[in-house]
Every structure is written in structure tokens, then in C-alpha cells.
Length: 237
Image (cartoon, rainbow, N blue to C red; front, side, top):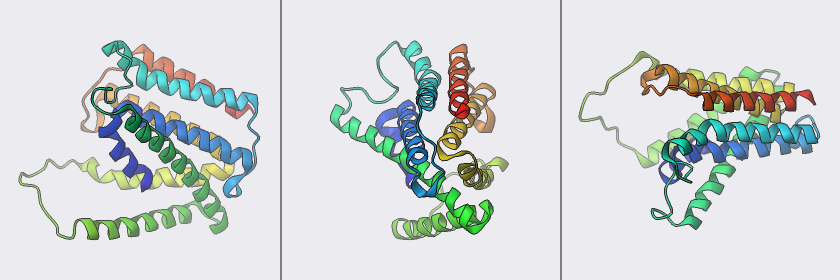
């Protein structure tokens, strides 16, 4: 819940590209630290030179896929967020650090849910507990901040796939709960990351789910290849 809310808060502050990059950095750092130190009862997997190089490749792939196309298009030094004239640079870096922290929470959630799945003997039960807690907390927040139901002035356009978000989210949490104790938190995080980036590129290429179509270029494909190479290096250890 904190991770998703942080993404919503970060987007207008630092832009879409940085909202992707900094949480991803936190996810990878925390995932490798959890594996290295065995936090949350995770299986210990030492941070070797090969695994570290693989993580750097994944980060580089994300930068290539997300940031480089914007650099080429705009020919600026911006990550796609606000410029120095729009916000104080120190304030921007506080938001960026929060993005890294939010990403670290996401990786921690993967390890925690994985261990809970082991204790309960079922990844499905772990996902159920996770969503139940999140629902209760969100229900309290909604009741406090929005006690009265309101309706849009104009009738919104409804699509059948609008109701799939919860189902997809459940599969996401379930997959993490199963993968973390099986292959390690670090590798689970980077594999899910590659899936997220691949899915986002497919949505852009074909304009799925009502999104505006943005053709994928060779730069994004190259970044995806670099990410896959990084995952392969981490998996070799």
C-alpha cells in the first residue's frame, strides 16, 4: 500500500521516468541485501562479483529502456521530471530518496510474503493475508478521508478490463510469495522487473488497455536485452 501510494505521489513531483528508475534501484539494492544477509529468514545467497555485475546490468537496462529514449527525443539532461527552475533541487532529491525507500519496501514485501507462505504452507494463503491487511487499512483511510460517496458529474466510460486490476495484483503478490523462498528475493525482484518492463513495452507498442500507442524502438529492445543479460548473470550464481 505504501509502495503504490508513493508512486502516485512521486509522479507529479519528479516525472514518470524517475518514478520508475528510483524505486527500481531500491528494489534491486534491497533484494540483494536480503539475500546476502538472510533477512526475513530468506535463504542466504552471498553478493558475489557476478551477482553485483548482474544487478548493475539490470539497472543499466532500466536506464536505457526508460530514460534514454527521452534523452534522445528532448536532447536535455532531464530524467523526464521537473526542471531545476520548477523545483528546488534539494527537495527533488528528497523525493528521489523516498522513491528508493519505497522500492526497498517493495522488495521487503516480497521476502516477507515469501516467508509467510512458508509458515502457512501455502503461497495462496500468504497472498490472502496480504490483501486482507491492505484492504482493512485502505478501508480505514477511505472512511477517514472520504466518508461520503460522490459520483462524477459526467458518466465515465466503462471497460470490461477495468475490473481486472485486483485479479492481476493478486497474481502478482501470489507469484512473489512463491518465487521468493524458491529462487531467492534478489532474483525474484529482478525477474519481476524484467516482466514489468516487457509488459509496459508491449502495452506501448500495441496500445493495449486504452493507452496511447507509442511504437517501441531499438533502444527499448536493447535495454530489455541488457536486463535479461543481468538476470542471467545473477542466476548463474
